Amino acid sequence: MVTIMLILISDKFDESMPKALSRFGEVTNDQKRAPEAEIILVRSKTKCTKEYIDASPKCKLIIRGGVGLDNIDVPYAKTKGIIVKNTGEASTVAVAEMAFALMIALPNHIAKADASMREGKWLKSELERTELYGKTLGILGMGRIGTALAIRAKAFKMNVLAWHPDVFFSDFAEITESIEETVGKSDYVSMHMPKLSDTKGIVNKNLLSKFKKGAYLINTGRGECVIEEDVVEALKSGQLAGFATDVWYSDPPVNSPLMNAPNTLFAPHIGSSTKENMGRICTMAEMIIADYVKTKK
Image (tube, rainbow, N blue to C red; front, side, top):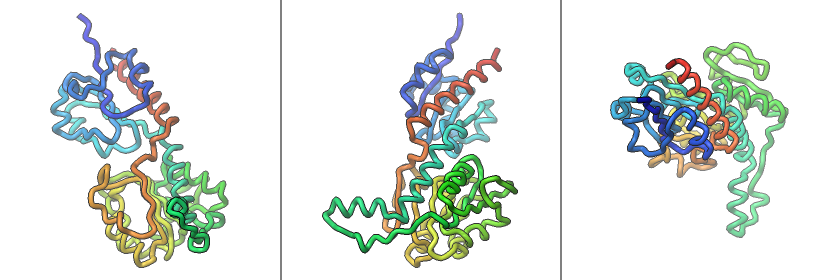
């Protein structure tokens, strides 16, 4: 008797995903069937903790539709012989465009202008804009997304600096020797770092004091790479002119001090949530599963 492989789609993906993956086996989105699943696909909602993994004894492959692996206990998965993959390449354009959208919207007061108009206010003289043209962008984390953002910034005639612990040259940015040098020279700072022991809380009171006064900070990397209370103080003091974020300590945020801070712009972790990216994630998941099936034979 041939056993049909069960594939569990645990979180929301493109609607084409079930049909695309059906050639590999049975596809379900029934969470209760996790103990039967050989392959589990997750985004950020499902937390693949030790307990979750132990409750999925037949699992051999976990695919994270997105960039990070924060919600998966990768070391423990490996001890159970589970392969863990992500689809990082798929999200590059979507997240880079999100970062750029926030970088445009924040100094142009797009959200405030829209909200005030709907309230019947006319804040023509109060909403003073600043331009990106000729300004310096500092990128923290010069991987795929950081590089894609640099290319877009160059098209807006911005000067681009970047810091990355193991990147020493780039065709699209001047690589600086230290993170302090990058933030000290930048009018805008955009964060594109994973959450690691070295990056957790990297933007804190000490580093914020090194920022160019009146700079704007944008985070589409990981929420825990900033100390929220320190960002709030920097906003209140004017050390930061504004802060925009799409990422949080938790989804959704709970009791975040940022909610009462001035000059902020928030999004609900939608950086990778474009229709085009969902299609790319589906394609990459197919490729990962196809490779996995080949190794089984």
